[in-house]
Length: 165
Image (cartoon, rainbow, N blue to C red; front, side):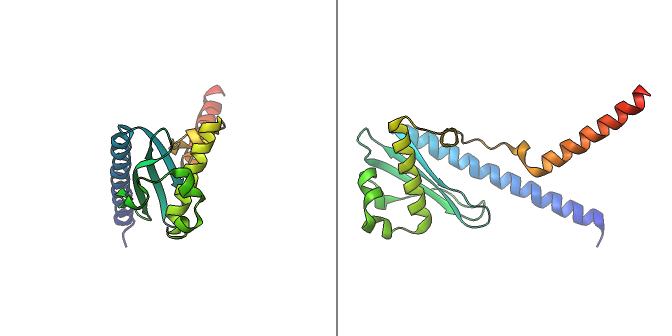
């Protein structure tokens, strides 16, 4: 096959994935802002690289009762938030400690709920870690950007050495 055709195809697929990923992030921001209007929001996350991951948004009151729960889980960029009515109205500490309730949940939901509960405890005790607060993704730390940076620095040094001679 023609190398130009393959390059254009790979570029188009990358662009499509970027656009759909942006739409997924926009869905997260929209749901997060909507649920924030109801009170404090806990985020439980269970990120995976090659398997299904999940994110749980819990709106809680001052007594840690769950007012609203939204769950996004899936492998692809087509995953969207869905209501999780099964846990609404329940107390987060009691739900996280209930073996029977946890056994009724699938693994992704259970791990997200326990992560949200850990974040709640850390917040209440003042022991939030930097990773609990930092939800940003630094795309420039990806290996491809480091490779490009190293190539540019090497070329710059080569040009600089030629100019100074």
